[in-house]
Amino acid sequence: MSETKLLEMTNITKAFASNVVLNGVNLSVDEGEVVAILGENGAGKSTLIKILGGIYKADSGEIRMHGTVKNITSAAIAGENGIRIIHQEIVLVPDRTIAANVFLGREPKNKFGFVDVQAMEQQTQKLIDDLHLNLRANELVRNLTMGMQQLVEIIKAISADAKVVVMDEPTSSLSQGEVEILFGIIRLLQKKNIGIIYISHRLEELYAITNRIVVLRDGKMVGDLETANVDKDHLISLMVGRELDSFYTKNKHKIGEVALETKDLSHPKLFRNASFKARYGEIVGFAGLVGAGRTELMKTIFGAYEKSGGEILLDGKSVNIKSPRDAINNGIAYVSEDRRGEGLILKNDVKFNMGLACLSDFVNGIHVKDKEWNNMVEDYRKKFSIKITSPKQLAGNLSGGNQQKVVLSKWLANKPKVIILDEPTRGIDVAAKAEIYAIIDELAAKGACIIMVSSELPEIINMCNRCYVMCEGKITGEIDETEFSQEEMMTLATKRD
Image (cartoon, rainbow, N blue to C red; front, side, top):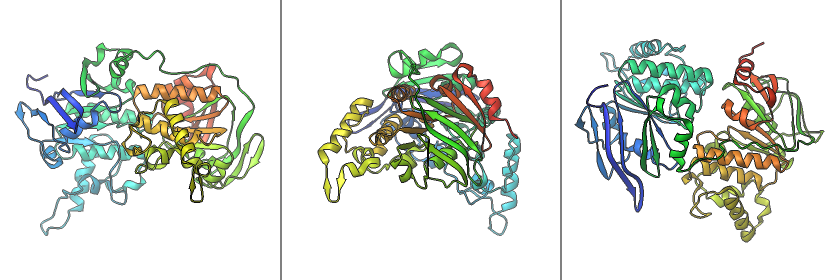
C-alpha cells in the first residue's frame, strides 16, 4: 500500500436542518483496495457517498485524492476526478446498445462530426473482452438479464478512466453465477489499481471480496476493521449497537391442511407444469437462480400474469384467478420483491399505503371511517415497531426495512390465508432482517400459509420447513428441512432437462 492514500475523506460532517446525519466520519481507500461501508439503513452510508459523488456538499471536512484536496461540488467534477458511482437502481437506456449506453453523453465522433458507431462498439467490446464477459457491444440492453445490465453499469463506470468505483448493493439483482462474475471483475479492477467502495447488506460477500470494513452507526464511524480479523457477530453488534440474540427466528409450529396447491400450472413462455403444495402453519421456500421463473410463478398465482394451463386450488377447491383482485378476494397476499415500484405508492403517506388492500373497510362512498383506519395503522406500527414520525409521513421517505413493514401491514390488514413473500429482505439491513424474520415466524405460528421466494440460500435454510427449487421455468426438486444444504439446492438450481 502507498503512504499517500488514493482517496481520503476526513472529518466529514453533514446535517439537514437540525438532523445530523454524518458526524466526523473518516474513510480512506488505497489503490487496488476494496473497502466495504456497512451500516443499518439511516446510518449515513448514502449521504457519505452522495458527498463523494458531488450530489451533496459536506458542512465540514475534506476530500483528498493522492494527498491533494478536491472541491467536489458536482457529479461532473467527481467524474473528472475519476470517481464513478454505480447506483443500486439501474439507469441504462433499454432500447440502445451496450456500446451506446457505455458512451452515453461522450460518444466518439468521426471527422464529419457524426457519432462513430464502429469506434464506439470496438472500444466497448475491448472492455467487455478484458473483463472476460460473454456479451456483444451491439446488443440491445433490453435483451439482457437484470444481472447483466448491472455488469454493463460497471463497464460504463470503468470506461472513463475510473480511479475510485463505488458499488451500491451490486449483487441485489444477480444470480449466484453472476455474483462470481462480478467478483472476478472486482479482482481485475484491483490489479488495475482501481480503489473500490463496496456497499452491501450481505455479510458473506464482504468476507469474499473486501480488504477492510468501515462500520457506520447513527452517522458516526464505529469501526474500521481488517476483514480477515473480524467475525460476523461483532459486525452486527457494531451496526445495531447491541448483540442480536437471534438473527433467524424459526420455531416449531403445528402444520395444518394444504392451503394452496398448483397442478401443472403453466405460462406460455415463463414456466411450465409447476405442481406444489403449501400448508397452513408452514413456511415453504422457493430457491433458484435469477430468471428461473419463481417470481413469474408467484405472480401468476396472484393473477398478475395469465396462465396457459394447469390449476390453482385453495383449501382443496379449484379457483379461477384472473386478476390480483380475484387473488385478494380469495385470501392471497403477494409482497413483491420490488417494494418501491410495486408494493408502495411512494408519494402517498403511510396511512394511505397501509389501507390499500382493504380500502373498502374504511371508505364507503364519501364516508371515511377515519378512527378505525387510524387505529389499524397504530396497531401495526406498535406490533412491527415501525419507525415513522406520523401516519402522514410519505412512504418514500422511510428506510427500506420500515417500508417493508408497511407493505406487510398493508397485506395483513386484509387478513390473508396465503402470504407470498418475494425476496422479503432484499436491500434491508441486518437488524431489520431479524425483525422481518420474527414477523414471518409469528405469522406461521398463527396458522398462515407462507411461501417465501429468496435468492439467499441461508435465508431459505434457516427459515423454511420445505423448499422447492426451480431452474429455467421448471420445478426441479423438493427438499425437506432435514435435508437442506446449499450444495443440493445449487445442484437442483442448475439442473436442466
